[in-house]
Length: 371
Image: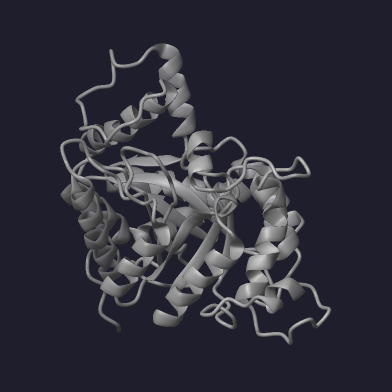
């Protein structure tokens, strides 16, 4: 009989839902950007040792509390500092970039770290309009459309840059991408995912036969409908013959429920600040949110953070089991915005060690749902 996996290790098993990490490189209150980047590398190494499947970073700009703006640079740093885990974007905001530039960046990463790079693409800019202008992308094209309107064409162009080489001027779809090649990039076939918090991205992912990740960790309202549309309209592709859906979830695991609830107040305060138009570092946790928000603000924050699992091990297992049973997710990608770096690492370690219990609980929840 094989020895059991060490505590805090994700076990890759067909009966288990793979777990991955979503990191925004948070800058904690009282800390620095340099420390945030150091923490991100440390957490990536920790996730690698714990057996998580992927470690994704999300592109954001002009955000005081996030250090992940140069996403491709940071991905290369983490890939070079880890051994096994896949590293990628969750995601690159394609309207901010020319597809050729993204293809060259990720083609270079895939050449340096073969078999370990993912390219998740988002349709939103990930910032405000003044910052969009500073990024040198247009808000409106001569025909009156925006860069977001051209997202499907940009995805196809990017796929062509990363795909097998074709003869120039072949007359086939993607011809322009072969007239101008991404070097490095061509032939690397970096796996592309579509990300989103809307029905649009789900339908486009289905149409293109691509895996889909839903941003339910901050926008849960359309989660179930998006997954239904994605699976119902899915068109098989060579790489992905079946639909593959990843669900994003906030998770804070601690030794007991009260400690986890205390740690979770940092994220609650951040979302409260977003509601009030206030930006800043990730706040320190507080004993209670009472008195910090109005009733309407509390309701708004709780709605945005609905897809969250917060508590001691038993509580988190039950919460995630219900989520897996309801969504039939092929993967979960976990965001853990905790102010204290050691507590954040501890949360991911505890979660990794719960996977056997989670698989059993999810199976039971699915049986109840089916009956």
